[in-house]
Structure formats: C-alpha cells, structure tokens
Image (cartoon, rainbow, N blue to C red):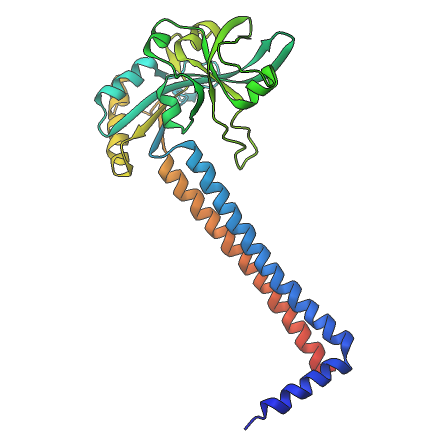
Length: 309
C-alpha cells in the first residue's frame, strides 16, 4: 500500500529544496485557473447585461417597421413613403387579439435650447402607451392625454440627461424649451434608466405627441406616415396570435397580394431575446473552453518540466 504520510513528507521536502521550480509551477497553475474563472465571469456578466438590456426594452413586445417596397423589381430606398400610418396603429389596437397596448412611433434628431443652453438629442413622437410598452416611468409630472394627440399640443416629456444639460439643478416641469424653433412646455420628467449594454444613454431623449412631431418638428412629406408601431401583447402566450392578426390586418389594409412582398416587417422581441441569449450562452461556453485549453496546455508543460527534472 502507498504510504501517504511518507509521500506527503517527501513532497514537502522536495518543494523546499526546489523553491524556484515550486513557485513557477504554482504560478502556472494559478494563472491557468484564474484564466478559466475570468473567462467564465466575463461570459456570465455579458449574459446578465444583455438580459437587463432586453428587459429594459419591454416585455411581450412586437415591433412593426416600415419596410422598403419593391417597385418594378427594384427595392426602393430612402426618400420613399413609409408604409405604416397612424390609421394602421388604430386598426391594430381595435381588431388584433391579445393586445394590451399599441403605440405609433417616429423619431429624429433635433437641437434643444433653453436660455443660453442647448443640447442635441433624439426626439420621439409617440403616444401615452409608449411609456408602458417600453418600460419608461414618470418621476414627476404627467403622461400624454388624448387631447395632446388630437390637438397637436406642444408638450414634451424629457429624460434625466436632457433635464440636467438644459436646466441643471432646476425643476424642468412647466419650463418652456425650444425644439428647433418651436416652443414646447415640459410636462414630465422620466425616471433614470442609465446606459444600455451598447453604451447608449437611455435618458438622453425627449418624447412629444406623434401628431405634433409630424406637423411641427419633423416636417414629413408624408402626412400620417410613421416609422414604427410598438405593440405589447397581454402575455407571452398571446404573442403568436397577436403577430398573426397584425400580419393579416396590415396585409389587407395595404392591399398586398398573396405572393407579393410585404412593405412591413414584424419583429418578435421574445424571439430576438432567445436568439441573443443563445449567442451569449455559446460565447460563455467558448470562452470557458479556450481558458480550459490554456490551463491544460500549461499543466502539461509543467508536468514535462518536472519529469525532466
């Protein structure tokens, strides 16, 4: 039988005699193990950050975008009329099953001014439902009301970054700023969301009524046209039936034939989330495998040196 006590004592003596080799051997093992831990931590951290970013976008979300249509076999590009309209959003909200909320959305960049302060940011034209759909919360003030949309009211909801840049420590509520040359009364300040995983500041934005955006800010050549419709389903089980109904409604409203290419596209956030999560898991496994190979190679090298010695 192996005398473990004698073997252990001999090993300790060997380590004392060969201090430099023992130190380098230990260092190699420590570096290899650390590499495995760090790689796995990086992969896990990336997965968690991605999950949080996706959660901040909203749950049970369907995003309908205008797609360039084909004309004479040629795909039309910028400058062509967007295919989605405010009426499309209204019909979807009335007719599609499994829907909790619908919000049309168009955006652009504009210069904001207040006194001698100015700031360039994203302007989003939308309705009250957008905040619910995309998980934005109001810290102070009020949301849009139907009259704001109907009457093209010049009111705005601002993110924390915009409020800080324009007003400093002052309360922005009821202050009047200018978007371009148009005065807007601030009716609400949003709760801070922070940066996304891609480094985008989610508080650097302004929301205004969709109709006001079209007629007073963006100056669109296509009245009533919008870039996107955001739809929140009642729950995850209702996503599929809601998507099917929306597809049928828009196909019929846009007079698209059975084999005709659609001038809109529907993106299911749940499917996008699963794809991204799968990619993140694959990345974590790959990083762990790379680190493990490094540890194995280092271990074999150490073993060979010890055998030669």
